[in-house]
Image (tube, rainbow, N blue to C red):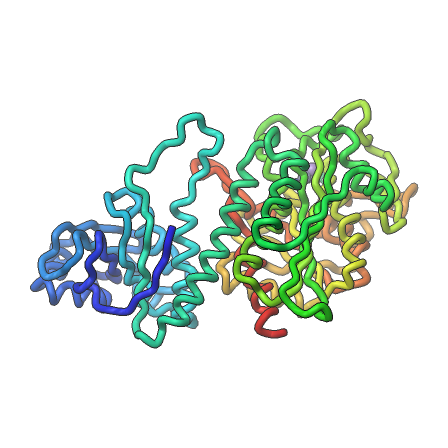
Length: 497
Ligand code: BES
Ligand code: MN
Ligand code: ZN
């Protein structure tokens, strides 16, 4: 979809549809009032009749409104004016785009971006309008033999800004939003692909193709190199699989050589059966999403490289399957990680941390400014925060705060979790340096504690995205989160550095 920014009166737009807001209770926004005046009170008449009360997300499509140059006028409920915040703005925007996509309009001019959102500038509104619109029209039908054709897909949205002086900021914000949306779409596509297509090899090929397209480097390490590196922990997870493991190294240089890179590390389990500690059959198909951390790293590279951000960024992806077989790692097996520390694998289903720990050790060679790993690591994270926020664990308070703040700005929220020493005891082992699981309590915290044993040499944060990477039920599918959080955090480094 294409986006343009414009400033002008709604009644003067020659368009298939002009979209204006109405507040609850029956209060037209400024742009709705302009249409009302031009149409000789038509909008207020409709409002008076009770067909549009302004309830958040409600819609009413009008045709041939006199006094206007557009074919249609779409009224969108904005909810109570004093409660109109980030979530409400995004909800209204989402309803509008969903409805537009069902009408015969190829394009539309949207005035919702003129409505004030507390604490947010016009650039925020434009960026989020673009991201939400792209999210709303996303479809995944690559695997259908007959994709359901959208009759007249929405091709172009014009976003209105209050003043001509807002045009430059608006255009930059639209470009940011579009790059993020492209990143999210890629992350969603990779996540939605089934495990028999999206194998470690496939992930590596897609990463390589993207690197070529956008001009950064991608190196793929195979089993012999992983053995050479002594990644015994990573290799223990892939032992039961017939698919070869891949370790993907992405490097994007947008800043001077002297500037230390940020490093993103992604969990790329392309299918998690649990291994010998086999998972129950119910919902096991969800475990094709166990590479969403890796997919979010690739999606973030897409966004950052498209924007030519002035930062240096490294992406590390440990990709393999977790399968049972005669060669698979068994409960009680002891493996030696790349760091030299030994691990007693008490549960082969706690495999994410086993592949991440070697990737985190590999990260040291980049002398990183900061390392952030992203992983669908624990079911306990879903219990703790549900599907709203991901968990942030960090050995550096400033880094944790910056990530939470980026999540808030991107409306891709994160919540800090503790990493206190007190939690570490449960990982103790009588036979190895430590075990790969704790007791049942605080499962997402003990998983993060495990990772922290490999991140002593740099500032590090861990995002447990088990609850936010995909949706279940009717809207089943990958979300593209936390690409907005990561991209926002990285772009903030650009202005700071
Ligand atoms: N990939 C799963 C975590 C997961 C489970 C994410 C369900 C989303 C939904 C991970 O590899 C795993 O199996 N974790 C175990 C750890 C346990 C064995 C300590 C879990 O959370 O049950
Ligand atoms: Mn598992
Ligand atoms: Zn897993």
